Image (tube, rainbow, N blue to C red; front, side):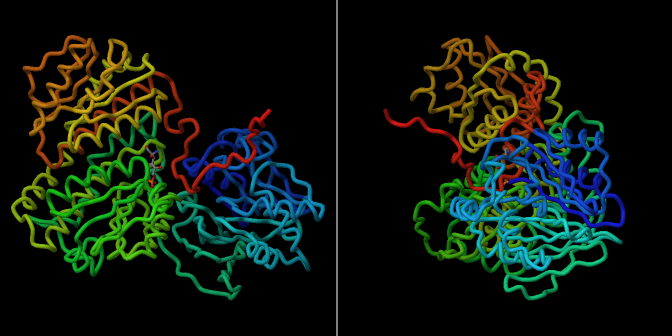
Length: 620
Ligand code: M6R
């Protein structure tokens, strides 16, 4: 994880680097740091906690410089501390920032220690500075970087400066995102174009194995064989308004209320009058879809829940079976790939390490093709998949995923319709879904009106430490998503169950101290769900039910919140909204840092956190 940024300019870069770090706090916010070149020395400032702490230090010290690198960290190797914050230095000569994980860090650290280097941190990143220093000869930072990365195993995006060059950054990429931002009399490097949105609209995306020298008026890129190469410049207009909170108190609140618009963006140019349009997943996708016999979904967290919802639609609309797997588990078994299986990844960021690794693993298997549903067009996942559908949700900054999830659901409906269309299945159903999708933005708007009723029930839920979420059928993954939202931003332990499972164990938890949130839309399972809820009532449970027109259902303890009437296929999307609102207001009530909840980061670009520095008790 982590976000890195660098700048070479004819103006002072300190403020620009800090602004860029703020935009990348979604990548981690355990500590932040900056190194600024100042002719005869490099000033390094580092602070524990969010970028604001570093900005306060900058205001105090006011360093001026036209060349610098900076970093916001999500701790993997070594706890969050000032010593473990980047940039890391070697002999006050080489300064680096790094995003990724160095897998062979133990061997390299030992080798460097044996040749006299002293380590000041517990990170796997510091060795990169020493390794570059070790290879640094004839003032050639690029050559030192190219020799150093040959020894690294793992994933990295690195930016380095050295004392002898006040005008250049040297950068390197392998399996972690890195791009150059091309400006006028200034050039930049960053993990995400969002970090540079106010500085340029022209970006060059590095490929695995690339290194580059970045100066204020030029840049040169070298491939894995150190041969100078041209990489295409991509023009991207990143709306800066979408990275500010506007009238809202939190990004999450803004993103919840943006959902009528984001859903309409997902649908734009993808629906005809009665059906989904052809080839919205790219040229040639219709042919692949006509041969698709089953789907393998792989994703993490909220995106995984989207896949679980999608399974119901693919079975009903496209008539094909689906498997849904945690990306973090998928490649550690030996999946048997049946003929005609389409491999589908779902990801907001397109940089989630587990999902990317699963895609790369799947490429060696006999899948029909790979397809990704992704929100970030420039992401690794989008670039490495055969076919892509962009969800077009716009930047999602709140760590808790909201509009990304509902736009993934819309995209999955479009995918199941596209496959059905390519196989000539269910034309009447496709026409009905097209109509429902056209009404979707208005229906989301109506469900946002539950806000006032939800605000009334939040104090009672906010004072509890546990909650149970119940749903049935396609609404089970929706309550799983609701439970995830509540736990990640309010720190209340929440579990989701299909309501029919209650009697097989969890009913033992029910008393008047545990709030039970249930989704009860009008459908074939309504009666069964209501009888499950009666079981809860009989045990004195406090129920918070979101449903339509079940006036006959009375609640002794808790509340019934009426939902707008909505059609079958879009109902899971509509019922997601009140659960997001509920989690948001409960977290507000508890006063958590809900846009940046503890221990999390928006984009999880590493596979796992290392516990190398944890001291385990030894056997007596
Ligand atoms: O960017 P991705 O969709 O691949 O991210 C996957 C998960 O890390 C993400 O959905 C996470 O579960 C969210 N924070 C949940 O709100």
